[in-house]
Length: 396
Image 1 (cartoon, rainbow, N blue to C red):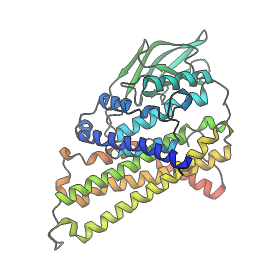
Image 2 (cartoon, helix red, strand yellow; image 1 turned 30 degrees about the vertical axis):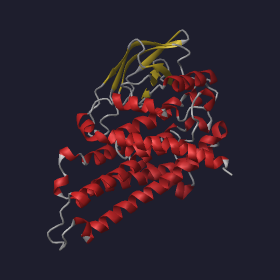
Image 3 (tube, one colour; image 1 turned 120 degrees about the vertical axis):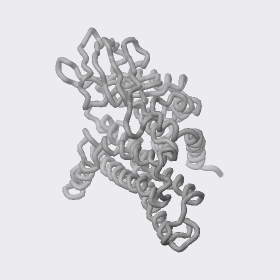
Image 4 (cartoon, one colour; image 1 turned 180 degrees about the vertical axis):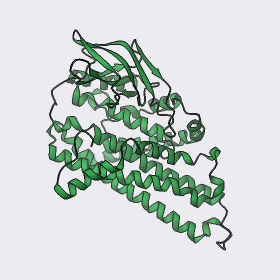
C-alpha cells in the first residue's frame, strides 16, 4: 500500500527532477552568460515553462502547494550550475507569498491565482536601506517617486514587490504592482563581481500612482510572529545557494582533475588522481560541503514546521527557527567560500583562466555573503547560546 507520505515524496521528487534538468540546460552557457552579465531573460522563460514558479502557490488557486523544503531543494539544484538563477527563483518564491502576511485574503487570491494562471515571475524593489524612494498619500493610494537599488529579479519580471518611505511619517509601505506599470523603469545596470545575472540593479519610479488594491498594508497579521519570517526565508534561500555552489564547484573541479590536471612534479605519481595530497584535499572539500548540506537540510525541516504553523506561530518558535537557520546559513557560507577557493589547488595552475569560468563559484558566494555579514549572525547565535536570547526579528 502506498502511503500519503510516499505519494507526497514522489510528487516532490518530480519538481526536484525538473530543477535538475533546468540546471543542466543552464550549465550549457553558464560561463558565457556569467562573463557577459545582464538580465537572464531566456533562462527566466525556461523557469516559466517548467511550472516551478507556482511551486508554493496554494492548490486552491492552481498551485502545487509544496513545502518550503522542496522550493529550497530547487534553489540548491539550480545553484550547482547557476547561482544567479537559483537566487532569482528563491526570491521569486518569497515575493509571491508576501501578501500572506501583509496583504488581504482577496489580494492573496488575486496574486497567487495570477501567478498560477499566467506563470508570473516576481522580482522586487524592496531594499530597506535604500531610502531614495518616497511616497505621499493621495486619496486611498500613494504617489511614489525615486529609485531603488538591489532590485533583484526586476528585469523581465511580471510583478514587483515594492517598498518605500511615507514622506509624512517615515513609515515603511509595501505594494505589489505590475512591472510594466506606467512610470516604472527597470534599468539593467547591475554589474557585481558575482551573481551577474540577478538583475539586482536600479528601478526608477517617476510619479507612479499606487492604488489601494495594490497596497500591501493589511493589519491582520500585525504583531504576529508569522509576519516576521522574511529574514528567515531569505537566509534559507541563500544557505541553499551556498550549498549548491559548493557542490557544483566540487563536481566541476572533479571533472577537470580527472581529465586535465597534471600531477605535481614532486608527487612521484603519473596521474593527478593518484596524488595523495589531491585525494586528501578532495576528501576535506567533500566533507565540508556534505556537513553544510546536512545542517541546511535540518534548517529546512525547521522552516517547514514554522511555515505550517502560520498565524499561530509563537515568538519562541520563530526564535528557535531563526537560530537554526542563521547558524546553517553561516556554516554553509563559510564552507562554500572555502570550497570554491580551494578547488584551484586540486585542479592546478591551468585552471585559473577566465575562459574556464571556475572563479564564478567563488565570486557568486563572496557577493552574497557580503550582504549579510557573518559576524552579526554569529553574535546572535552566541547570544542565544549564552543567554537564551532570540535573534532580533529585524535581521534574522
